[in-house]
Every structure is written in C-alpha cells, then in structure tokens.
Length: 128
Image (cartoon, rainbow, N blue to C red; front, side, top):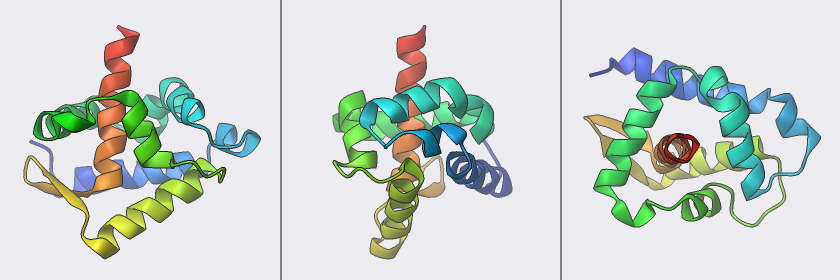
C-alpha cells in the first residue's frame, strides 16, 4: 500500500517530467512518440516506476477493455498534433472537472493518470 503523499508526489512528478522533457519539445506528439518517451525516459523521470506499473496492472484488471496499448495511446493523445504535455495536462484537468476518475487500491486518480500507469505496465510486458 502506498501513502497518499507518495501517490500525489508520483503523479505530480509524472506531469512535471513530461512537461520538461527535451524529447517532448523536439517532435510533434504522436502515439509512437508517447510509447518511445515512456520507454526511454518515463520510468526514470516519473518516479517509482514499479508503483506506477502496479497501479496500471490493477487498473487493467478492473478495466480489461483497456488492455490494449493502441487503445490507451489513442485515449491519452487522441488525433491532435499538440505537444504531449499539453494534451495530458488538458485531459487530466478535464477528467477531474467531469469526475472521470478511477479508484485503484483506495486511491482516486484522474482516468488519464490511470491510463498512463496502465500503459507503463503494458510497456514493461512488451520489453521483457
């Protein structure tokens, strides 16, 4: 079980890491870019990758219809060509405004945050 402060620190770290990623500024946001960024920088920049992947595994167990990397990438980025950070921040804020949240191990996460965790979990599975 992780503490509330740790969970908030991890999710804030994820948002900050994506915001200041040099990779994010160099290329337009495409679905493949998100996966590449998460594979290359995500686990180290976001925080405790093991905790995020565990939350992602729980999310996928609760929402098996989202057990697909392409679906998650489309859900996170859509078809717009804005920088990844803009899209993710916009979607996290929208999730909270519309109460589109996921309860994972007693924690309430914006759906976008939960999907980032799920994508990290699936990426780890394809890297093995």
